[in-house]
Length: 196
Image (cartoon, one colour):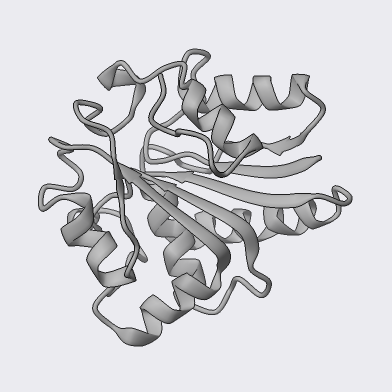
């Protein structure tokens, strides 16, 4: 059994057609433990509130029984995870971490509490220590990562990014609904995550 926590991004309301929902349904139907919470004040997020819920849900995930622990985050959810790690709130690493289209922290000035400097060695080390394995996925033409995922995140973290051409921010508005590759990846980390 895989234990999965899915962390959505800014303004996400867990719409029926978004890839997070398809992933949740597919994994639950296959008998896996999946937590997919609605983070508070999604239109006007406050990072302290999001961090509080993230840590609480991680605790619940640990209670879910045996199995590999997988954390999947999208956009602001990625930044929330990275800042929680940098702040020392992640007390035990997850087995696998998937960061999908993380938003550039420089563009998140409207979100109270965002203070993530990826150029700091301590920040990088804390993020890398938050998971045994980290996969970074993004696309070209993502307005939330104008300098590109490699330049903004991959280079600072020392992680090679998986780039899916034309996927933009991998959001429902970009036509990113059902995503077979992410379902396959949860079940097998060697699967091709780029498959639609």
